[in-house]
Length: 267
Image: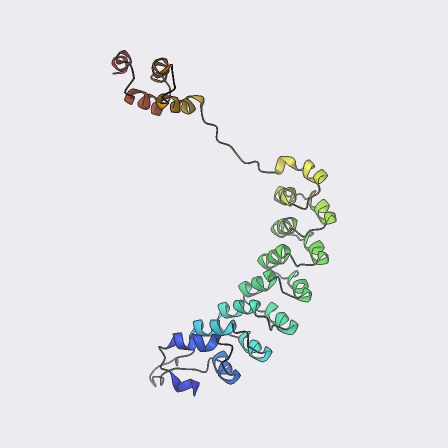
């Protein structure tokens, strides 16, 4: 019935059906398999209409999905749909492992960054061939110390830098990375809030200090030109009229109390 209940342009209705926890499992399975084709397909069309991606994305968030339906969505052609699955509460460890072996790098990155990913999955992705995936594992706050220890010796400095910035890092690993050959790794150690004070002290030169913009005394003094309590306004105006700063000179020459002789001299 779902296959023919709505014309193909009623995607808003179908999105609501897909995301509704009370929708019958049978109907959800039809959407998961993208079997809904809307209106009668054109016999001349090479590719028949199929379920819109936005509908399947809504389905991926439905809390009533069973592990069987989630297993169908793992194979969905849309990368965005597969990425959405990492947030689903009914994901089993077996499903996590299947998603971790997905061919799309962005899917594996999403799995590696998920705080609810099982340890076995993080251990698997810590050995992924893609640097981006290993980096996500390194920054995941739930990555176990044993895995972080492995990644602390990764050949790629970007991964080691990510490990050094992990707020859950053990002191032993911080000590190891404080002596890394790459300055960006050592800097990440220096900026890690868990780094012991003695180690941070040895790396103090690597900590980026906030720069404060210094305002010249002359520019700070401009406020005195319009301060009623300023008692030496004439001498200040005469001084500022010869300033090397063009803006200061302009403000001075436009001041109503600037002496006439000063204006004549600068004319």
